[in-house]
Each structure stands twice: as structure tokens, then as C-alpha cells.
Image 1 (cartoon, rainbow, N blue to C red):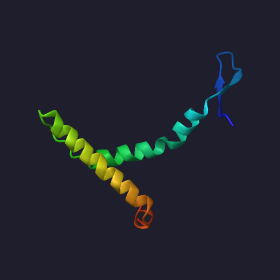
Image 2 (image 1 turned 90 degrees about the vertical axis):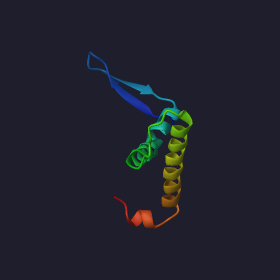
Image 3 (image 1 turned 120 degrees about the horizontal axis):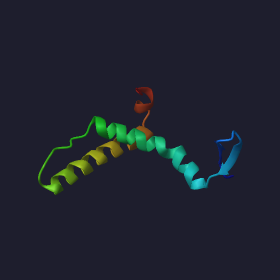
Length: 84
């Protein structure tokens, strides 16, 4: 099944536009990316440094912690009980 989008033209007629399945999958799963970005921004270490590799290290450390927390929440009842 190909999801469809209804678009209204300037003259008021409505046209149905079919979108590929990859667009539907992207929109359906985008919430997980938003949640990860929100968690990453809340607890980011982001230290300013002239050395690019230190910033990269801190970014990867942050990303690893958020991913570990997400995996923990998927396999634990604690996160389901204590949701915000």
C-alpha cells in the first residue's frame, strides 16, 4: 500500500499524490530520532576545545550514553513506569 497525500490547488480542487513507502517509513519513525536528540541536548557534555578530536570524543560519549539509555528503556520496566 502506497500512502497518499491530499493537496489542494489554487482553484480549490483536491488532488491525491502518492508517496513512496520510504517517505511513510521515515515519517512513522522520526519520533525516535526526535526523542534521542532531546535526550542528547538535555545531558550533553559538549566542551569547547581547539582540538577537534576532543569534541568528537565528547560527542561520541554523549551519543553512546543516550543510546545505552534507550536500549535500557526498551528492555526494562523501570522506564515504562517512570516516564515523564
